[in-house]
Image (cartoon, rainbow, N blue to C red; front, side, top):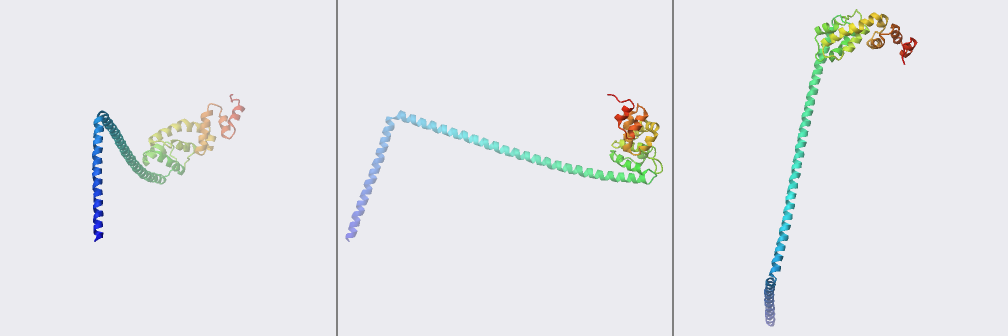
Length: 266
């Protein structure tokens, strides 16, 4: 029983102490508020200035933060726009690349088809020439001429524009170096009509004059390379004595021949 009495007394003492502590805290808070109020009233001007200063600082900080946020947003927008621009540019470049690849493939395919068609047309045309009494070497020289012409000529055009003007070389007739030289010279022309014109001009202005003036050398120049050398000598030394061209063509040094004949100039 005494234990309960002592516990009750102890509880009352604790409760009383708590009550006193609460009263002291309330009194302290009231006193603190009173002191603060008195201080504010006594220093109202300074307090107002302090509030204004704090408000100004807050507004300034808020403005700085807002400016930084706007700058960050603008920077982010520029970054996004830059990324979008780069993506669009990359897409455009890739699209152009794919279009270019497709175009090149189409060009290659068309060129290959064209090449096959030209090869077939050329082969058919050469076979047609072989079925007739044409010189074999002429037919060999004819192939690169046909391939160089933009539009494959017909067999009729070959006869009229090339075979006839160059002298109708047959299997049994001569096809000399002069004519082979002409066939080399007309390779690369765009049409058989242009070839016909050049053949007639070269036969008249080059081949026939050399054949008439240097018959022995003409016979010796049996291929296009030798005849080309003879043509170059004829063009360079044609106004000099015939013996100059003959000696140089036969292998003598050109400067020595000219000096020996008193024609070398300093």
